[in-house]
Image (cartoon, rainbow, N blue to C red; front, top):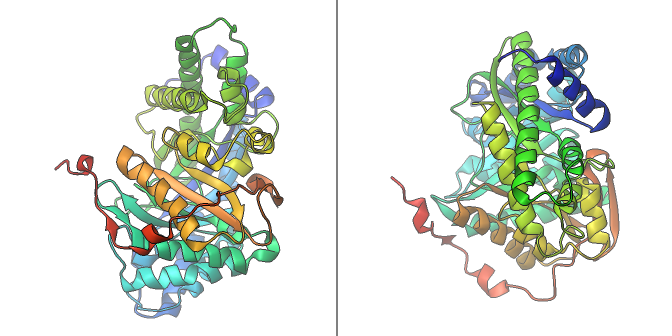
Length: 455
């Protein structure tokens, strides 16, 4: 990369000091395929040993890079090979011991999360997939740092509705097992359509089989920076000017992210993977995607025009990132995690942002229904329908969508749950009075759409 100019350095200082720019995560991917063993206990020992060996200096290195460059690195995370692939060799029915080994390794090296308790079931289940799905509720209850994800659909495969039903049951069981913590376990569980295998953001982070032995990827977040740039525009500037401003800002954010990521990888002695340029908000004031949408021109997020504004924002972020780096990957764009964005929380409180509007917004954002709270007594079929709808959005639009939805035991529509930290505040959404039980009972698979056949 070309060296920074004096002007760029001053801009970077302003973005960090005044506009909450940070590296949201440095995520070290670790391939665990060589940890497979016919004996479950040996598998766990190998996983613990390998993770600790490769990640022992991740936190220390990230902190030193952050200090040297003056850019905060908020989270340090680990992503591993999907555990169902690693566990297949042992044939175990209960994979909770592997989750415990992952959690122990995460605690030993001091990272925030370790992700990859993962399975791909968009076309069917192996024995290891079934074992992993059955283990998720207990695994997320008894561990502190483990995150889990499941691939349920893709444009090429369609939607495995039997897997959607099983995942729905897993979500409800996980929430109920952690009822004393507001269903917190389900906050660490996500499903995907068109899953991304180099995603550094939890809960969906894991590393695909085509990745290197270890790989360091970064996720950059800059809602406050984009908000600051747009606030300096005139109200008379047209949408072309808005898009250009976002694109230029994203370019600067990406440039900084790749610099930090490559240096962190160099010091760790690993390869640099990707920079994920995602506007990932936090509950902090001024670090909100909703604020950006309102600066673009909607009265409140959720009002008519919100989806159009979000489409402009997501596209401009991606274009700016691709101009700045040939290593843009992950999800990259704009995230709309409802509980983690102060502006989104306020929009729900005002009644402007409904579950239906959120689903519409997911057609153009980078992920999908993210950190959405629903009543604890929601029916299985209704929850399954919500998840299936989101999988269909991704399948038909050939884009990644996800669903991280949390039934909150004991709470109903409009009530509030506090998860704390980056997880923020959940306001329980009303799923409506009508259901889809007859549709959900059919099971089977929704076939791949025409655009899935591209060979």
